[in-house]
Length: 197
Figure 1 (tube, helix red, strand yellow):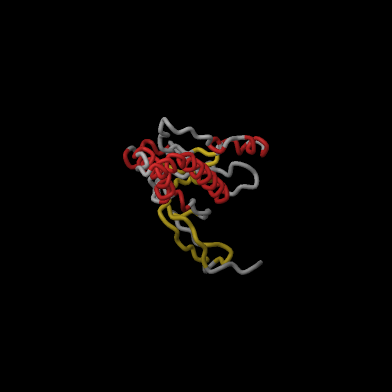
Figure 2 (cartoon, helix red, strand yellow; figure 1 turned 90 degrees about the vertical axis):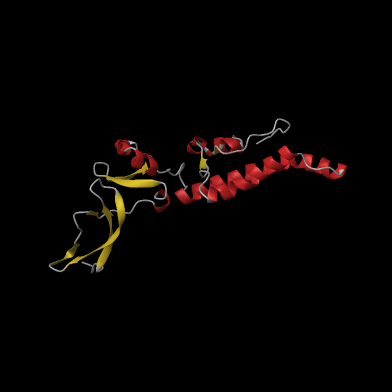
């Protein structure tokens, strides 16, 4: 039998099985084949770090997995603790959570750049006439440009891949870009602008 490490990381939870922190469990000096895991600790993989900013993680003993509860719901109404929000799953085979997030952001940038291009004629006309770009066009363009920063700042939720990705790759190719992601923070399109995306 291979020698075990002197200690391993375990998850500390409170009386409601809510994740509190990571701790070290050391080898039992009387039995070097097992670790001394305290009553308030779980010998399981830790919850997803990126979920812990807005969620509490609660260990489900029956399903043997972490479930995620929106912090504000739990803090304002502890009875809501059973209303779990599950972490996003990789939408199709071959996607990890990280690559799915990258794909969704790439699509968002693609849509945003095309929507900015759709407003370029207004800027060009104003330039040729020596006039100012209409204020509503300036404001709309700025809102489009601000989207990535607002996502980084946590003011907007990140886009996620839509259920189209759970079907065939052919369906994905035939679907227009705006239907490939779920993102609810696009600014209202001015009446005079028509978007292909």
